[in-house]
Length: 457
Ligand code: ADP
Ligand code: F6P
Image (cartoon, rainbow, N blue to C red; front, side, top):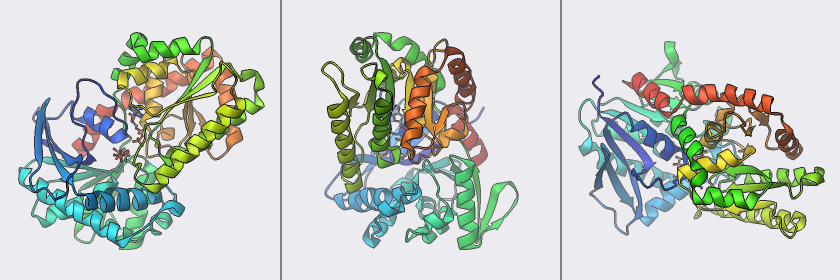
């Protein structure tokens, strides 16, 4: 079958690495999967900073993919990445308007970098290429490309939540962003709720006219909006997990645990993940169930993220404060209640650690999808699976309704869910796990990429 060349554009580019080194972030993991079926080009930021703007991208060829990356200047990174994308859009889109800090200079920097991306990418585009742009850093990119006479079909996938219109409207600049997003031919969101929020904003703020099949007419543009729940490479996780027993970190963890049961959390260190709140709930669990002290260990893996943004430094302090308080007041010689590590691990090791854990704690305050929830499920031993505790505010809750669903704002509810999960009988665990594995296997990362690209094409 003929497949058009795929051009993927995202802020962060994960250059294929056979060493299976860890790379934290759902987008990188999902897109690596998309390139298993398509040949093409992946364009974005190199992750490097150079004093002067570079006019020429760096090109690396690996495994059927041509990676084309550009460096950013310190000002670009500050205004576009740290500033508008991560200090204004990210909190607003995660419903944290109180944390959102708008600056006009950052907004202009965000638009400038989108223009830079478009100018550097345009010479690589051939007629017939399918173009797939990813995430909130690049909402204006289609408009910029079209201004440079690129007439290819361009799709956009939004990996994070799209908030209700009243929430989005609190952030200056978003009416302009709505006008920009309408330049995409297809807009994918994680959940139907996100798609509906975006449609309502376009209709309410820009007077868009709805047509059949989720198409909106916005001025001279027609954009189709649909949800495509992003999945994982379930087979890879299952295989990694069943073979991971010999990995050094996994063996070390088994030895350290002895007869204790493991509770695991794996998240980028981000306030949207609810880590201090989760630790507080675990503390409540230990206080209410004193017989469990010394019988469980909670391992939290949280690689640092966006540490130049002040709100990320603040969440890091909050986590360390909770950690010190809980380990200091409830720990005993020979038992540390929470093990906290900030190291990225290879995916095979993560899979092995998920499999060891009786409980997977995935309790974000708000999350587009949350791939960790799906990875935890896929890594379980079918004959003796662990229990997933999942926030109702993660996109994954739409598919994984057989998890123990909680509200992360209710410490006692989460504490009781931990107790119930540890006591849950084997039959119920297997039933819940089997129900969750159906969508995890069926709607995997290949399904997601194929569904989006078929529709775009
Ligand atoms: P987000 O995109 O907000 O970071 P997701 O849960 O959707 O959240 O995706 C996170 C991805 O990053 C998962 O695939 C997970 O396995 C990976 N990841 C998280 N922590 C680590 C780590 N310490 N080492 C390696 N990969 C990690
Ligand atoms: O999934 C949301 C997301 O922002 C991705 O776009 C990104 O790759 C990931 O989280 C990690 O964030 P960052 O690239 O800022 O480290």
